[in-house]
Amino acid sequence: MSHALEAAVAATLDAFTETAWYAYAIVPSGAAVPTGLAILEGAVIELVTEGAVAALVSPIPRDLFTASVATTMMADPAWVAARAEAHHGVILAASEHGACLPLAFGALFSSPEPLRAWLAQREACLLAALEQASGAVEWSVTLSQDEAGHHAWLDGHDPRLGALLAQVERAGEGTGYLLRRQLDRARQDTARAHLHATGADLARALAAWARAVTPDPLPQAHAKGAQRWTALVSRPLQDDLLAAVAHIVRVLDGTGLAVTCKGPWPAYAFAREAMSHAA
Image 1 (tube, rainbow, N blue to C red):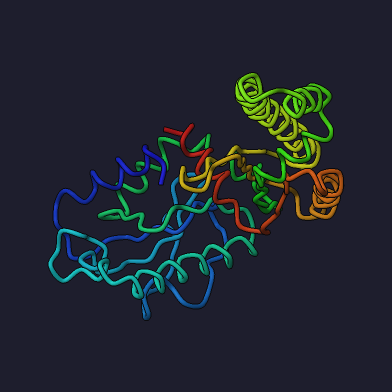
Image 2 (tube, rainbow, N blue to C red):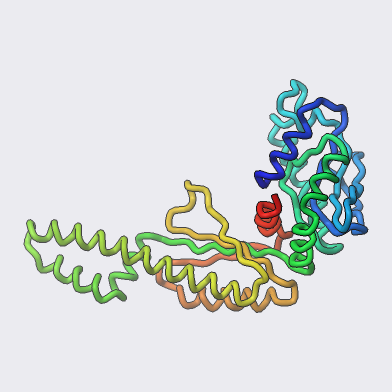
């Protein structure tokens, strides 16, 4: 959830109410309301409209999504997973109907009035983002590194590393130790430079076909030598974007670097970025 939306949601929950309005996504006013399963069984999905934009919402018992309430279900991972799946299902259905800016799971407003005020303050920015997202989907593209494989490939393809490696093999024990340390530093520097250049090439290839390309930071535990982007691309141009990525995959074969694509998804990352600028 964006910081602006998180603050707005928190402010609406200060005063206890029995009902909260669970918000799924921002859509154009007059958009079709998805049918099917809402966030809770038996809940209805409706529009809260302000000007040219609207939010898809469901009135729900507030207690279920309020961690401070003793009866909350948020401590149950299975319950949360089922609700998150339902949230995503509503967004998928809304995206099939037209432009949609998904909100993060768990966005609550105490009543329609604060939600309308939030929409009114950001109407122009949200409307522009909806126009850009119309008819588009997201693809997540990750560049990853097998460090040992990448270093081995660079040893055989980078002249400087090749020369240092030859010196290490000819050197005696004392000099060899210093040269090995120099070789290790050179490998790390060369690998970083090659990874950066490859990432720049990949980002340019995505930008050639996408409406927007958003860098997507990876969790620190999984980010070693990896970069990820989310590309918002018109549905008819998906094959062209994937073909551009496939070409880079072929170029990288055997280098210790790899590119993977996942999608298509609704415009989650684009919406998060757009709403961060709408505050």
